[in-house]
Image (cartoon, rainbow over all chains, first blue to last red; front, side, top):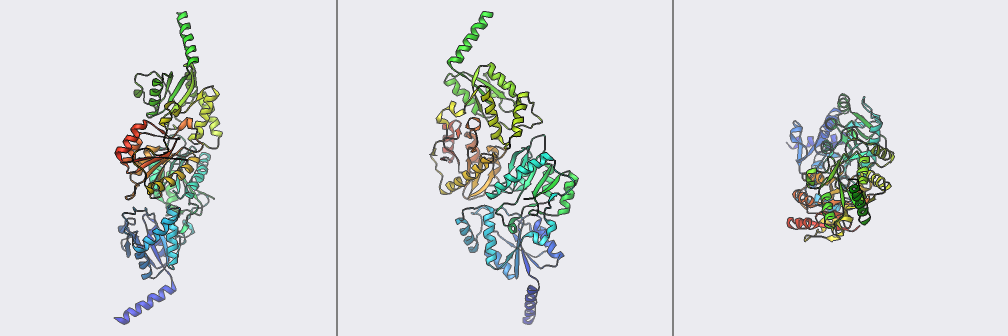
Length: 290
Length: 290
């Protein structure tokens, strides 16, 4: 029994040396699932932490995972160490919960105390502090795009078979300017523009909700566009702007003519499916250079 | 018959010399109605134009008015002139309609052509061009506060019996900064802040809708605040930020602890009722100096 354990430990130790194990800290949505697919395809060892209330355990059927509350940072770090992770990736949107509802462990309280002393208290700032904390623990924090590969990033210009017309290009140009200003204030990543008017601006509600609520605000006439950018101070490893098939579907349902994102800085989950969906619905997907 | 008309014309001409008549261009909401009350109280002659689709004719029962489509600028100017108006006040929110739905007259087309050549195409820019156009026609454009009196403007500091606590003051401070940046981009006037996080940002949906949609986004814990400011480039005669009893009611329903506005630059419709409502619901109304 003892010798068996020793063999396992030796094997585990050798495996770590041979190939680093990656801890996937999973929020909501499809991105963490795609990361797992990629790890499997490349035979990269991984360990899954599902953030309670964000990732749906039923989506991870057949996988081993730890379900950990968002406020339990110490527990998360211990779990990553215990499973011999050397790398960490954070993936999928996480709604910042109510402070009074969070079950904070000591480690999380320390982090939040540092955060409370910082001037900027937007999501970027919180994520940057979290990345730093993980690095101090010796983990290499990597971006989802490093796992999914360059093919998952938005390309420059027209990505499908539909192109934005001049009216849409003007909307995009205004949208990029407005979204970057909002981003520099760490407010949100997305705006909807129609006929050079800012129809809606994302803050805590998320991109999908923005698109849905703008359905009623958009006017007849030349259709609006969704513009999503990376915040200027955003750590690309923590919260890269992301679109997926659902973004295309609800943009279509809200009457938008297309989606503009920043080329090489936006993750497109299920790239081929997104472009196919946009093609069949008549929407453009456009990568703006910055 | 002819002599009667002459007497009327002479009388009208004398009346104009004695006291200028004011044209009230009415959008939606209570503000135009309060202006009419004020004019009546001070026996100031007035002439009412209701913007079709914005002002409710049934609210103006017993008054004479012209119902004019928003796109009929020439018709509006002619009506103001024909009724011997020398002053004009624009009051009440107006949603910018779809270009394709607007029945534009020649005058409006000329104005929109000038607007289309301007770089900034937000609401401020449109209203500034409109004010200039009315001035070129010889009208004196005045702000609603000039009619309602200084008592209708937000005062400095705590206006009712409830005061913001330090957490709320921090939220207000961030809110003013964010709202002014949004305003400088001519996006919107209002933001909702909770625990130093920007929960929602107003664009085309209007302040009431912002407050209502944030109900779902606000977290438990220390409550959020509504912050509403004047846009830096905003002509105060065209679109002064406004709050009223309904703003207080829906802020309460959404769980906000209070409302902060810019002192001396915000119209409070039915001042005493607003303060009484806030007092009885436990909300603060706070006037920030700029």
